[in-house]
Image (cartoon, rainbow, N blue to C red):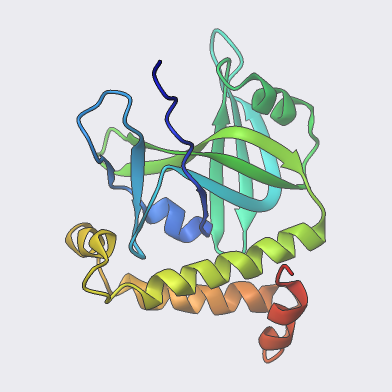
Length: 204
């Protein structure tokens, strides 16, 4: 009796870094092996967990419904696409009136455009309405995870950081660090209270 593959942990990542994660890979030749996006901060992601504001929905399908949603966090925009193979997510995008806070769990997808550039989007497994407090908690937790990845980037045993050096510009790390600070400040518009806010919003 074959054992079903275990589901990968959904990584927390801000939109700016997610959209920069244009390199994908598999870790085995098995056709059922998971596909990973290589995060520029030195980790792999088969699934991601994001929270933001759904600002726009549009049915861009020709013969059948194919919904595109824009989900905005403090650093940029996630583009979410759902069609007949994601019926619950497509239904949510069809029925939800923006703007609305949402959480999305899904898989990174890459697409090469006619001019050779790579676009990164999110194929949702689930989309759920959330409140502002949940969005704020996600920002804090994602900031912490991003800083953790940056801190571990120079660890010689970090194989994904080594891959990131090959495929991305390591100078981008300072930009991601700056955006973490800006993301935290964006929640109240006031700098200097980040440490207190971290403690208030961090999960018990």
